[in-house]
Amino acid sequence: MRKIVLPVVLLSALYASAGFTAESAGGNKAQTTRMSQCSTEAKEKGLKGDARKDHMSQCLRGSGTQAAAKECTAQATEKGLKGTRHKEFVSDCIKTRSTGANVGQGAAGSEAGA
Image 1 (cartoon, rainbow, N blue to C red):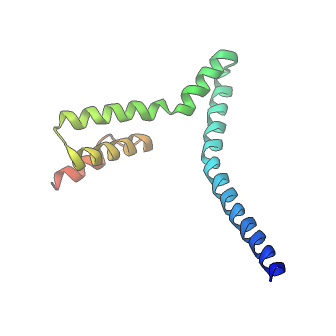
Image 2 (cartoon, rainbow, N blue to C red; image 1 turned 90 degrees about the horizontal axis):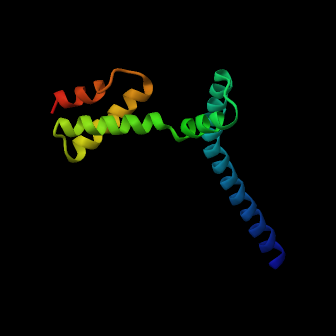
Image 3 (cartoon, rainbow, N blue to C red; image 1 turned 60 degrees about the horizontal axis):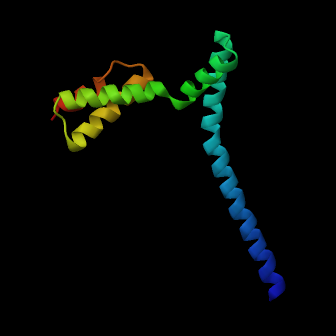
């Protein structure tokens, strides 16, 4: 009986660890892609040394998204939105900014029906 249980336990552990490895590899793919894009931008700009480090830091941090979040939150506050409507507006606003569409277009459409 022990001869059967040990291989089954070992195979189960191996199978489980393979799943975790696949998940972590998939999660790192987006970061690796972003790092590659930031590196390419730095190379195109001819940045070296501290200037390159600063660019990489800002690029990987996604400061554009943070700025968009602040601006979208300010817009939602100006419109007097609260609760769920506030969250939805900010979310839609950030998404439209990141895709390059007109700001607030999706959120304004959801407001019209309200």
